[in-house]
Image 1 (cartoon, rainbow, N blue to C red):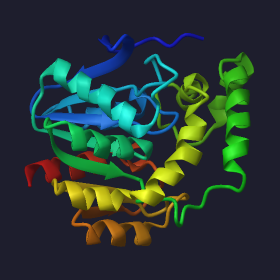
Image 2: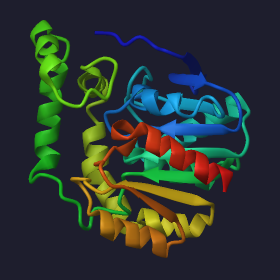
Image 3: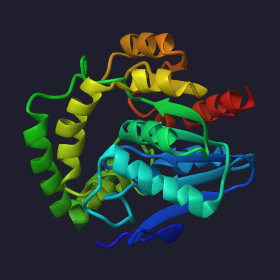
Length: 267
């Protein structure tokens, strides 16, 4: 089932990149994670757009953006840098969730338009990650199944009984998963593990020396919150913990995360 854009499609090196803009004021760029889309920030945008120019981008191989190559963080960052050039925005606060945190840091390394960084729900590397055994094999299989059933009527019916209610469309996360490029699984679970072991995100934060806020969920099922907090604090970042939230605190507690972003911007 084709996805319907909620923003504009910008031509970036021959690829149609989906970009959504809301509000006015100092710019903040929101970058989703693996199998996400601009819709993951719908509720957070409501808490920011009154005072900020909120820019959301579907990464390559995700959402309504085309492309099945150049899916690694460095390539994604070059695409996003071209988007910022096209929009001609300066001193951008860039917030990246999960894999989007990698893209945010790679973007800051190449674009002078980035003024500050926010990393959400992402540990510096996989050294203490708690992914299910065999994820690199099982996830592509699960993704293929999701692509087959995500838009079936019975799946939509069953979605009425799901917990959470984080999206306007109860099938949003499944729909986003279904359209994500299959090659992303290897990028995130195999290639990323190797890259982060060589150059973890906390080392990148320290090297960039930009103002950096890290927002973590106390109940993150993938990464130990205390270990992650200690490493980013040692790298010079400001760390905030959302106590009653998991890996995606901006979905579970959008008001609190919006408040943290506004306070960080004010400081």
